[in-house]
Length: 69
Image (cartoon, rainbow, N blue to C red; front, side):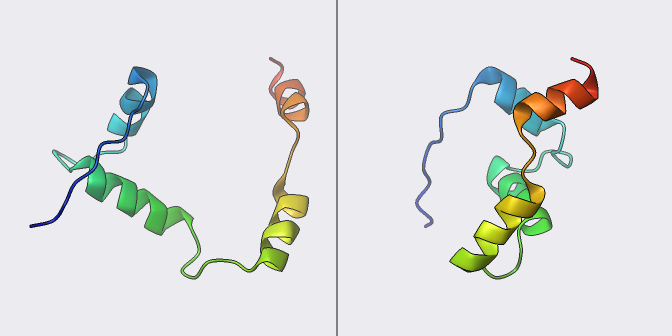
């Protein structure tokens, strides 16, 4: 039998996750599906992580300004 764990989430976070569930999909399947869809197949190297951060990072203040918030 597979051992299960508990992850504490804020109610708002759980509600956000629920929007992505397929029918009565388990949260374990949901999280794994989201990870598969969004993360690269192999873990990036330290060098690749640094490049991604430099290329993709947008300061929060800039995002707020772009969104007009």
